[in-house]
Length: 457
Image (cartoon, rainbow, N blue to C red; front, side, top):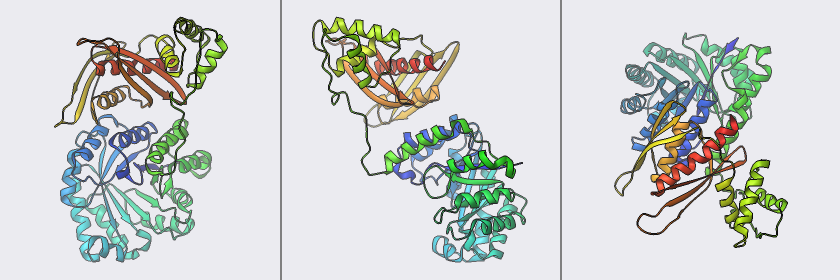
């Protein structure tokens, strides 16, 4: 059985994504058990470096691969990967005559020297070095073989050939890949453009021929991760091909990553659930339990029989004094429904913020007898705190709503926060109260998370 490694790049257009979105995609890919997560070349900015370092703190199974194009980039990438359990530097160079001159300003002999130099420098910095021959199908075959051999001789531990043009038919490309693999000892992988709709077929036929890795994408031009995984799942045993992908998580994870990327890059209108302000609800103490529970469904809650009773009793108390709208009903559900034992308990938090520093949060939680700690940076103190909680818990939940308000008046006023998280289409709310609004927000987030954890258990 040929167990192929699956390498996945974060997305087609990393510049369109925020730090948090890139971080979340990497976390989902790790959960899916892909073999390699590919990052573009680091620009030298603090955010790019911080992203790789942050991912290195939780990605323990997959290899983190960063692209490099010159010796300076090698040093920057190696520093960012210093905390990664499995790190690789990836050298991507065009092999076609036109590409070499246009992108690298080099003729064939100088390109061979450049390959040797870059791979050697990368090998000094990390154990794993990947050489990717871009546009390999339009290269002069003798030169391509020399380039692959030069990269291997300089220390490359993995080699890839890429069909950027998408011109070869699948069987033709598979034979081409088999021929390339036959001249080197290092494992050879393939990357295929889907311009002509051949990417999946080309990759699968290459794997049947013995190729050891496939570069895939979740969204964009290339071998679809979802399609590749499904193909191997359904026909792998018959054709002697397997992967380490967690198939049970496949569709949910791909859907989640696609939503992150689509919401960022797709400029067409996206349908969203109506807000509380848009939800027309007006109830009084003459409304029966069925009407009240129907209203809770309109604002996104699916309550148990026990919680329905609690909500209705609290509703009657409030409705005796005033009419109840969507916001009031939402507060009732948050305060009396879905109260569960705390899986996660807040021990301490330190949040730093200012107009000359980026906000950061350091939080310590207890889960049974285990102490859990995390530290993250964010766009503000609340964002940093929520990101830190996600890092500790190891799961991202969609933040459906977040509200803060003052409960009491004066200098020692109590702050109240309401957090609503969505998981698998279901809404979970949490309320928190503290003398500072950040503490209230952290407690509200944990309250919602504890409800999710309790239901999952």
